Length: 201
Image (cartoon, rainbow, N blue to C red):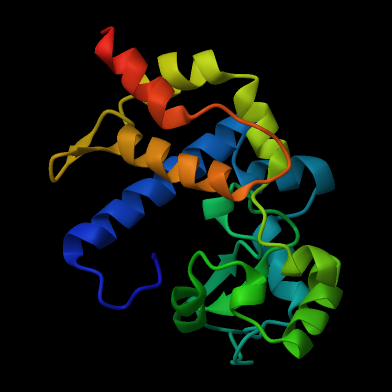
């Protein structure tokens, strides 16, 4: 797991590569970076809006982050489940953000904290307790599978080899794990499709 403190340096590199892959994929699926999308939709800066929403304090430990550069916008619902960064982000200090990592909110916060988080993020408690992946993002991906395999996975970032592992392959494996968590629809096996396409190259 990404929040396992016993990870090796190689595992941390893999985590970073997977995370970057998810960031790039979500940006492509939703048409731009979170900051640009939010600015276009609201006329405000995402970071400023989230910082003000949480009063400049870490939601988890209440540390005063005003005047500090060590604060983070946390994907309240994790990027690892294909949730984009948006106005529902949570303000966390660096320590708390590292501790939470890719866990869904219900796996990190208690019920009282989830109730407070729901008020701040305007996400219902039931939503915060739901560990399901983003079905909208999965639907967008399924409509663009040819693009995903033929263009996205052949981009320079995705064909990079780190410690003998191809970044795109790590992403496909991680995506298949996401799909396996979703019970609402039947999706193809991306790993099988990936291997089949590689074998014909």
